[in-house]
Image (cartoon, rainbow, N blue to C red; front, side):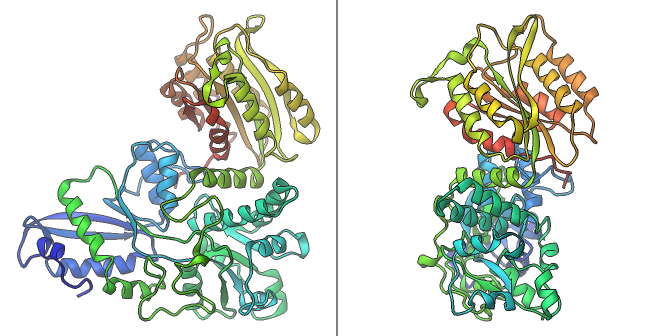
Length: 561
């Protein structure tokens, strides 16, 4: 028996039962076989709750697919994840590869998303995978490599290390590696933004949407040309490396355990909200089953560790693997924290920085200058809403390099004659208009007018669409602190109707609306972005709009999953 005998198990397992409750479990593909074996034995031995038989259906599900389904159900918007396919059904229990999925959902709109438990049932350190001949050049296995060393090797341009990454918005190991690399860039001194952007762009040239695609780019022949032209390094899980090497490739991968150690994959056992009490009872016992010594052996067969970093019998650790992984070497990068103590703002910054650096855009920033923007913000030392917004916009401008094209408008009501908006800077490459934008931002002041929201959004959308550029994310980013208040303007119904007619799937324009203060209607804003793509982001505390701006700008149009 996998789990042994314990009180809870005896209460819920019996020799006879009637009826059936089906407990659906979606587990990360590498973990699913172990969960399936453990639960199958539990069911075979008479799993029941209050006399009702329990059936456990375990599916191997990519975390990004389940995340898309959960996000759709709870009204969240995850950058880079895209829409749910409609074929993925949210399970009763979700065991993704990382707690970052749960945190991203909670922090990006799924405010009612409160899964039960969430404790780790397995672990896999995140490593840097290198073909062994490449790793040897870095002193492996004798010499320890740090993230700063990797950053320097990746950032050398043509003579540097050919590095790759699985899209970090869709892959937890990729995100973990990204967090460590950006932390190293931030600690390196000098021009932090330039160093970070350079590293991200170097990674982006070797990015893959799928892990298997990335793995296929490692050298497949043991000759200098193949090694030189193949992928030289990528952040993957320890399990990925072990699984790859188990296929006996021509060139095995070395697993480099860099310091400080990146955030590991921690496989949280998340009981999703809304399931019935009988299923909740069964879920509690299933969790107990998945924390036993017997399950530790099943994890070892899948090249996974127990939650404490130790491994069970049969685990064939890569050369140089630390055990247990719970000591100082397992600390996460600064500002990130261990599983359960993750810093959501660090994740948002990493994701948005990745999006900005690797996918240049064409953006029209539109700032509300209605009279209510004079309202003071206690949490920002009594600066006005306008001042806080302009400050966030100025700081955001520093994130964009010269490959971006950005323009600037302001709006209120009757700002220029009967017109509600005014162009301050036309949309042009930052290489030519950065100074003009900074000067225009510094001169923005609130007016005496109201909020001409609908007329302005329609015209801004038309303007961006008319100059649409392929290969870029074309978007409108609008800041406002109020509902539409323009007695002479178009209605909401007219706005939505016109946007639907203008919308062109071949020339998409995203509308990101950042609502400031408690007078904003998120429902009103969402009705607009549901038509255009993008999303509304609302905070009652204007001092937080800098972080919200990062979330919004990280959004990218994605095909349905």
